[in-house]
Length: 453
Image 1 (tube, rainbow, N blue to C red):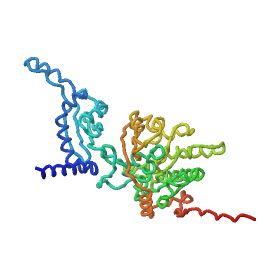
Image 2: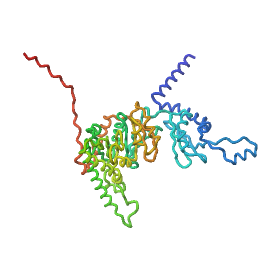
Image 3: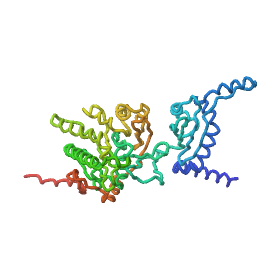
Image 4: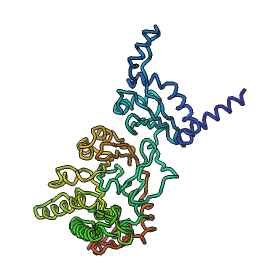
């Protein structure tokens, strides 16, 4: 008996250790079985307690009265499929007549407590079908990207993990321009490094604007086609980008060749339908701190500031068809930055908000999209840098967290793919040089001089 108890204690200790250090293994070995049984047993009572049932139809009530039988119970949504995953469960439900997908989104927190799971996210698959993605543990506590995740291709980069266990991609073809806000030490730089490292292996030109003297983007200069580290250089660089955009539009106009005999599939209005040998390289513009571009400390700087904002607005409005995409970062992005900023923000479809210091900053990202996303951004814990709320102009949003990419990892990746850096004639004056390594040593104190006699 003593040996049996010792064995049980050892097994229990191993299970608890596995749950803490390898939550995915614990979930696949033990947690998923318990969760499936718990969901199936509690399903009807939970649906009824959460108000997600509908009364029986009138014909069944009439039939029960005629046959002198008990009144039929309220009906729950029908389970179409229950599928285990490596992070949780996926429950697909068929709604009853009179039910709304919004009811399940509003009851997500109650479902989470009732099923004893970590998180529940509801989304409508199609008319009358709702999918509940339930996670069994906190997948954002220690981010590990799935080993089978597809590599970056076609301007679609895996950059983070969502709270439901799915991989969050930054897809420039679907969401051409995006805004990334967050306070200091919130994880914006790590997110940006992960994005640059993912784009480094693709056929794309990277253009950086880092007015913090280049401290964030200059180490990655081996993979950048152009880089500006001060507002004056940024103004000239954006003007060159606008000129390049005009040249690309002339190429598209020339190659449209609209005629009666031309097939519809060959008519193009952007670079992606051009023949591959004629297609210009796409350009991703990364702005590290937009406030440094939009603020004008003196009257003399207002003309430069207006020029910069005008060029950014033009690129955001016209750049997509020319293959120019914007990724704008900043701590705040409101009307206090001056004229034209709100016009620019309206063109930024993708929104990502890391931890912010006040609700106003979150409203700048999601106030015109989703009030729930604003509340989620304000509630991000400062002990979890890299956690963010990602959404778009459609109103959908989710919590994400990027894996920790060190500056050394990003630098090594950019150096490895430096040969893929394309040359663009308009941007050639802004091509960065490799950073020079500077050794900073301790300043030797001067020797004390002898007293004068």
